[in-house]
Length: 439
Image (tube, rainbow, N blue to C red; front, side, top):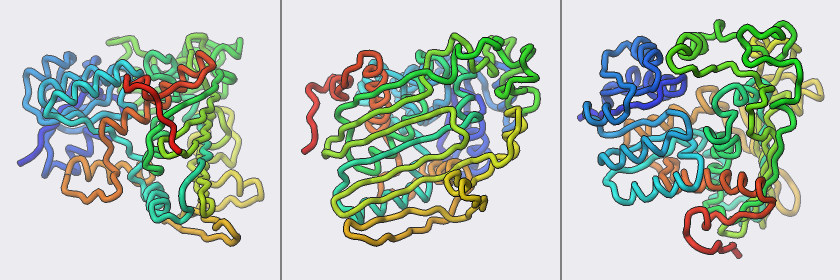
């Protein structure tokens, strides 16, 4: 018997990650029975692209009352996730939610309480866990190749295409997204939580808006029609993107949402330069940083343990040719290691490396074949486990509400720490009492 799904939130992610695969790759086990979005135009585009004729709604309650479904997929704006998750649980349905599960501690507690009273289950789509490269790191740490992990150094770099885009969209305001320490870093914090198999206890953070926001006087309200379009290196043209035009520009008249806001707008209140120190239940300590205006995209991590050190990281995109306009530069980005590029090495590799340094000398290199599909091969593997089921999960790839809570609460605690200048205990955010530091 096919499992029935409704989807709320039909932007590019809702369509690309969930709707189209359900219709095209999982039709033998899954059926889409309803679609919901606040913008009727996006609903029409979603139906057309999927080639299906199903009921569509701009009112979520009406969809729940009108169509049969077993699970609701939530791909709406972050700050609305909790509404749809909780209503789905109250209706006895499972909720499959995009990350982050929600944006603050009150909404997080409400979700956990609703799930405890419901026969339904919450699943959070942490696709990075499923990438073969991330899985190999998990396996090596679990095997004890560096012994007990004492500390983790983790830096994530967003370039001036991907990174800048967060300052154009609704993400630019913390009330919508929780800032990048919640919206983006929830991926990264979840990976560390999963890799360590520990929960965060205490967070101290700092962050500033250094690059984006009102740092430039030559700015407009949006890219479309901006008088500085010809000279601004951050100019984007929505008419040149299928999603940009059909899902957003052509849909503006319905809800007023602009997808190409100026990245130097004074309305921006999220940070672009962030760092956090996280103490874990097992005694490990994470030093994390996120920068959203880099000349390349990628990340680096190092685990320091009782038997040695494990280093990993990926170069996701690097620009070997200078282009003055982002819409042009995006065509020449290549997966080249920016650190090797500094030595003239511009090779695009089909294997990724993990390096293990034993405590007393030597080095071992573990090769992992690169998967160029969505999120390093994570998207398709996550969907298989969600929609086909009966997939072995010995490493605990599939994430529930507790994992969703632990990942966002690091970011929520970091936001509070930035605001107050003080460390924040995760247990207090959950109302679980006094934090206990690992020994």
